[in-house]
Image (tube, rainbow, N blue to C red; front, side, top):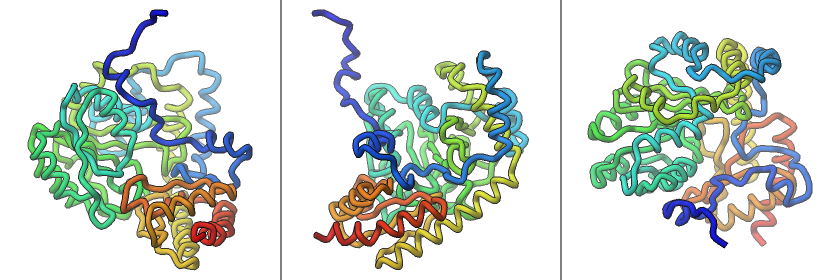
Length: 368
């Protein structure tokens, strides 16, 4: 039988899901998780104003959303103190990364990232035929000097940096990020993933409006704002960079309820402040649980904590598997030596009690 064939590039790629979802694991184990602490979702939930905005917009779901996303871009401009022409809205950071790679990366074009950094970016680079060059982490941080050297060596068009970092939760101060961008050649664009910037300490984010022009900053409503399921992200960049998205993006990819929710969330900064307090308290609790079990928590600027299990990746994987078998969904870094850790998302007191009760058995089981 003859049938249409995919392009040679697509045919050469493996079927890939960068992250196996907790729902897939629940179906495999035949039971729901007691604690969902693996996807860095915000279990404290969105602002009531965001929920009310979604509910109000539900009756308007028969209409397409404004393809220019005017209201949200105007609100973001007012919030950040810059022009609305410096924003592009997309289906979370994941969607925006896909558009960005499509804009800049052709077959064989060099792209630089850290080995073990956010795999969805790598997925997009492979999907558009780019050549990915990786450098190792240094002391559980993305290595800015090594990234710069690899860009110069490969003449890369894009270099990816998450700050704060996923999966380790570490971070670089703003002045180091700015210096990193300034040291890049003008032909290279820094993709600065700031998904967790709201939970980071002061001095982590370069000042909005003072970012070098060769930087595009990725932000999201999925983390601190609690809207992961709504899929609303945005990028901040020079108008000449942002305008390129209009050539290829899905102009009707956003939903009216999602955009309304993001607008409602942005307008409730008091609720965001309460969420950030809950995240900080949860990070402290996770660290205390880890320490009580003889493990070392890494300092975190995110809504999760990486816990050093003290041995190799195989041991950490056994700990993780035991936690999953006990109904606690967690994840771990993919690449050594970071894979000596497990990664625990911030949770409610009830969530963390499940983790606290399950961890001693997981450690004992992993030793056998």
